[in-house]
Structure formats: C-alpha cells, structure tokens
Image 1 (spheres, helix red, strand yellow):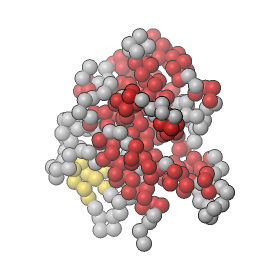
Image 2: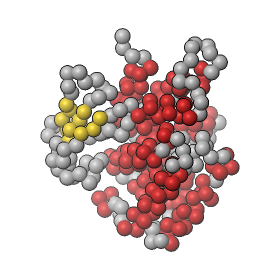
Image 3: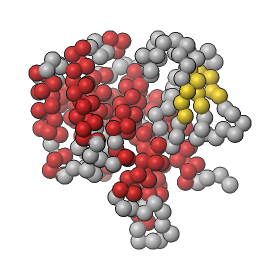
Length: 282
C-alpha cells in the first residue's frame, strides 16, 4: 500500500488497539515516559519515515513507536522484558481476530518486536560494546525512524521539522526582537501535498508551535520520581546519578547517534538547546 493511502481500515484496527494498550500502560509510568511522550515519538517517527527517499513500512514504524516503551526496563522486570515477541503475541493475535492484518503470519509481528527490542540507547550501547551490533541494525529503516524519534524527544520537543522546505511560500519563521532559540515560532502558510508531516493539513492552514525544551523537563521528571539529585557539587558521591550528569553521559551525544538524514537535521537545533542549557552563554 502506498503511503498516501495509509492507513487502511484494517491497519486502523491494529493501530487503535496498540494506542489503547499504550495509553493503559503509560498511565502506570511517570511523566518522563507517559502517553504524551509516546505520541510525540509516533508523530516524529512517521514524519521521518515519510521523508526518507524510500518509504519504510509505515505500519511497522507506527506500531513499534506506539509500543516502544511498554516493556521499558526502568518500569518492568527483566523477566517481563526478556521476550517481547511472546509478550505482544496475544495483542497481535487479538488484533487480527478483530479485523486487523495478520501480522504474525506475514512476519511483521517479529519485525515490530525486534524494533521495540532494539530502540533503546542503553541497548544499542551494550550491543556495540560486545560487538553484537550487526548489519540488520545498520540497515533497518523502520528501526532508525523509531530510534531517531525517541532520541529526538530526549533532547527537544515535537516541533516543525527543519527538513521541511524553507521557501518563503511554505514556511515563515517569525522571530520577535526578544526571541531566543527556545521560543522561536514558525507559521506554516502552505504545505505541499507531499509534505512528510501533518498530512491531514490542507494548503494554507496556519498553525503556530512553540518548542519547549521537553527533553530537559523529562530528564528532571525521571530524576524526581526516582529520587535522584538534579545537581550535586563536584566530586559528590551521587554526582554520577544526577540529572545534570545525564546530559553529559547521554543527551549531548545523541546528535552523533541519529541515523536518518532528516533526523540528524532536526537533531542539530535540539542539540544546541541542550548545549545552551548546560553551558549557557555569558
């Protein structure tokens, strides 16, 4: 099925079921990994997928994005997270019985769960450390879209991607005299039919977005609920677990680990937001 016709009524069945499972699960987690985070990842992953020269399987991208944090090891036991395919198999079977595509028979259930299993930054780091990062990881565009979307949300917010055309008849960037890069506003005056994002918008739809540093807020939120310090004096024994140290350990390195071209373009701006937060200009 072409991306213009996606999703079909059958695909909508499994998408809605995945969203329902996600919302129910995320309600048990904290604000750093809530349904709003997942929805941002979903939208960004689909935007990245549509922007690639060869469109990947959009259903795989969307379902994997919706379910990518259901078995997050920060919230479930190692035993629960050890076999994602077995965990999600009843979900895939039920969706097929209710009119959705048979993702088990066509093999996409395996692909979706493999993407879910490999999205995390920690997983990739561990696989690379032991030489287990292979050709599939380097070549799977569905994985790359979901990975990039998840990582972009760790260093920013879901704003209008910078890879959209920048001609004046498409995007007008409005900067007030007091505007900083954390408060820049974009107004879409026209979206071409082939636009990789917001496909439901009609031409000359005007929308305004502000891009708050959501990644910074998510980091602080997780530190609070896990009773980790936000900041410590130098050489303090708890410094390695502080929120600010997380920026140095992971967030400033995300830009270099983004795998899609449009994802890297989005990452440039968000990286500067993170750098400005931890090293503000004098």
